[in-house]
Length: 489
Image (tube, rainbow, N blue to C red; front, side, top):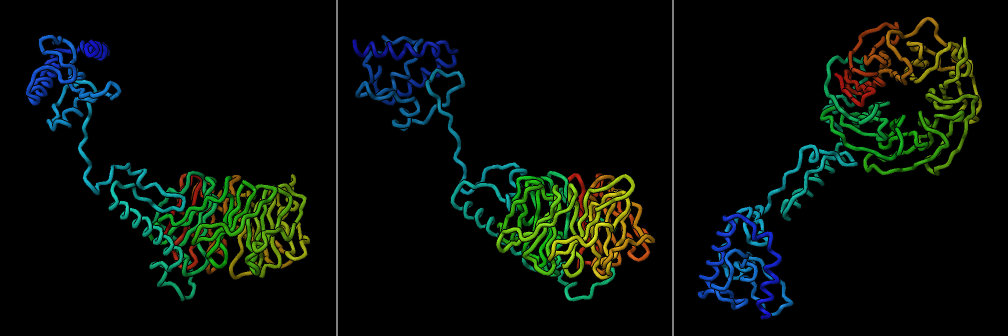
C-alpha cells in the first residue's frame, strides 16, 4: 500500500500533463514499451504494479523510470534513465507527455569564435586601440591576446617612430606652403564639438595630430597616413576647451571646464601632473624658455602660472576682467599677451593686455581700441608681429615689440566669426595665414598683401580651427562644431 500511495502521489502532480493530445499519449506509450522491451518484463520495476492494473490515460513514464532504493532520492528524468540504459533518446514532440524534456544542442567546434556585432567588435577602447572579440577555446584566446598586444605595440610604435610620408621631407629647408584643395581623410572623431586641432611641432613625429573636444576627451591621430586614432586621453570630467603640444612632442597640455589642467605623457597615456584652478580653464600656453611652466586662463580675472615639477602655482596675473579668452607668448617668452572679454560701448579697454612674465606687471592695456573682443591670437614665425581674431569678422595685425601698435593699413577680411572661438594660424614659412569661419569654410590669406588666396568649402557647420602641417607642404587639418575632422592636401 505504501508503494501504491507513492504512485498516486506522483501521478497527482501530472494532471495537466494528462490533458495532452493523442500524439503525446502515443509517444509516451512508445517510450514505455521501449523500456519494457529492454528490461524483458512487463510492469514497473519501481512499484511492481502489473501492466493491466495501470491506467492507460495517466503518465507512467515518471514512476516507470524511478529506480529508487530510498524515498529520499530524487526521481530521474526519462533522458537520464535512457542514458543509464544506453538507449538512444527518442525525439518527443512539443506537447509530449514525457516530463522534463531536455533540449540538446550540438557542441561548438573547437576554436570557433562566437558571432559578435561589427559595431561592438570594432569599438575602440579607452586608449583608442581596436579590440577583437572574445574566443571560446584556449587556442583563440592566445591568438586574441597576441592580436591585442600587437595592436598596442603598433600604436606605441606609430607614436614614436617616423612616418613614411614625413620621412622624405625631413632635413629639407622649409619652403612655401601650397594651398590644400582635396580631402585626404575624413574622421568622425568626437561626439561633441572639436575646439582645436594641432600638428606635433617635432619634425620626425609631425604625423601626429592632436584634437580636443567638448566630449571630455583628447585624441591623438595618425593624420598623415591611416587616420587611425592612436591614443584617447580621458583625463577630464568636463569639456576640454584647449590643448597644445609640448616642445619635445612627448607631452601634451590640456585644460577643461572641470577647473583642471593636465600634462600627459603621449606614449604611455599617463598623467604627469594635474593642477586644479578655481575657475573653468579655457586657454593654455607653455613658456617657451621653460617648458615645465605653463599658464592657465579662463572664467576668472586671474591668469595663473604653474610649475609642473612641483605642481605648485608660482605666479598670478590679476586684471579687472571677467574672462580670459586666449594667451600668447611673444618671442623669447619674457612677455605675453592675453585677450579678454572686456569691452565698452565705443572702444575696447583691456581687450588685449601685455604682461611681463617675471614681474607679473602690466606692460600695456591700450593695444586694441575697437569694440570687438578677440577670441584667439597667433604669432608670426619670423616677422615681429602677431594677429588677433576679432568678432568684427576680420583679423587685426599688431607689432610684437613695444608699444604693440596695430597696423591700420592691413587686415584680413572675408570670413565670419559670429561669436565662435574661431582660430587662425600662420604657415611654417610665414607666407600664409589660414582661418576658420562660422560658415564652415577655410580662408587662406597672403601675409604680406592680406589678399584672399583661396576659400575652401570644408564643413557644413562652423569650422573652429585650421592647422597647417609644419613639414608637408600642402597638408592641413580642420575641425568643426559637429565633431568632424578633415585632412586636406
